[in-house]
Image 1 (cartoon, rainbow, N blue to C red):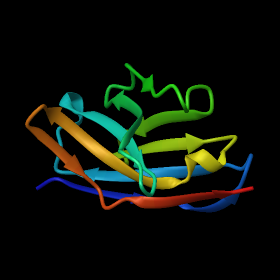
Image 2 (image 1 turned 90 degrees about the vertical axis):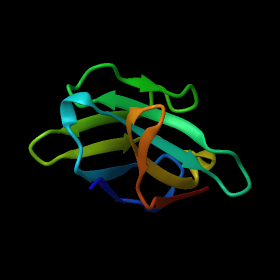
Image 3 (image 1 turned 90 degrees about the horizontal axis):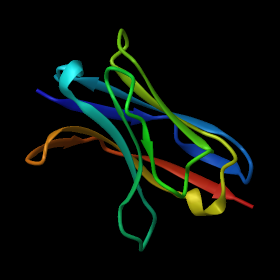
Image 4 (image 1 turned 135 degrees about the horizontal axis):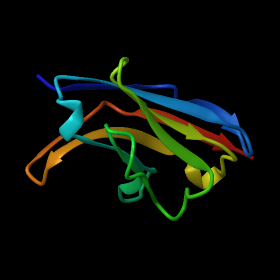
Length: 117
């Protein structure tokens, strides 16, 4: 059974930092891509970042490139999203996604990030 649990969201001011975590169970780590998406109120879902469990192949959305860093810890079965220099436009619900194939993907419950100026 696949389960993803996000945590680490909260409220910060512009320029601050947050570190999101996603604990994953039930996935073969060597075959899974982990991704972060976000969705702001009234907006469509947006790709944020992805990484392989092997620790390579990092990809970032243009809006977060240079500010966000995705990483993973195999012993803890956890992926992280370090978010620096946060902007108001980063305000959204952030979701962890475990990607196995086009027809096999799993989602966490989401964690809210609110950035105020």
